[in-house]
Length: 454
Ligand SMILES: [Zn+2]
Image 1 (cartoon, rainbow, N blue to C red):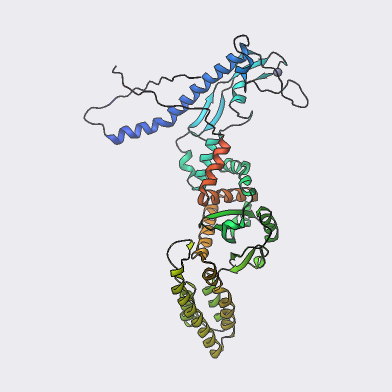
Image 2 (image 1 turned 45 degrees about the vertical axis):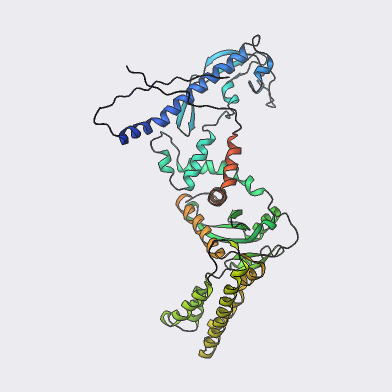
């Protein structure tokens, strides 16, 4: 079915005064309202077509009514669908149907028909458009709301579009989303070079402090693969959930990186190899030396030294395969750093800093394991720890801005969305395309734009 829309726009222009900026400014103002009206016209015309086909059964064979006229059988206690596809037009509903769209609120007149078979009254346009009976918004709108929320600029989206959605409304959009599905697909350890986990605090209802925990994978190509986020769920249960997604049962020698959370020491022990992050090493050393009675000024040189040793320089790039020729300098530096840490431990002992010495000894055991692993396997994630830190800082920052006072469910879903949007673009787009049901059933293009002088 093909139709043409005629649009008449009228403009006045002050010759010699108007600027490009002003023209664009006014056109931009017009954009959403124009789209809203076009949408309204398309829907009215669609409504006419549908009702025509359902009422003129002599003119239209049943094939022409395919996909139209779905309704519940009148008075059926089991809410079964009626097979009747012949209707009588019964005018328009008294109230306009309000639907929030990405262009603003659409106020749509909707036709009512009466089924000739069961006598039910219904609006065939809504079922044809696949809008639920009580739906008040379309999903593109939901999409933009969520994108805007994630980017923490939803005010900008709403302002000037006569859209009214409160923080509570957004909360409901988030809670109602089915983003969980994306987090149920199986993952293969084979495609990962590391798994990481961490937690961050979130303020929830009535200022209650909640814990958001997340597990992410880093693919061998260096991309973040979100594995799951959880709000106020303990690590053992998280471990069970993650394990269910992992295809392989046998252990793989990929590192599991974490920040020393007590509950994580054996996390995923049967599929990965635990490895504590070292980015808090220097801070821990400060604490240990303080226990030995050292003031900040006195411990600072040793802390600086550790900071330097922890940050062994690795070849450029976030995540890459360590090339053979890059290995030698890394190895040299690694040996030197290790020797220096040993020296420092010895110095601490001689000076009687028992806490400092044992802390450093502990740290040194795990400090270099990732480098040893990279030298062995060639897979490097030089900024793994900083990536972990960055990912969590990012989630935390956004959640703090948006999700203040939200429920566990909302925080969990929102953090899943943040991770997908931020680090798994393709999956995020796939999710929405699927959700919006874009299948090539509607095409529109601009036939011509021309000016008629008045
Ligand atoms: Zn019926």
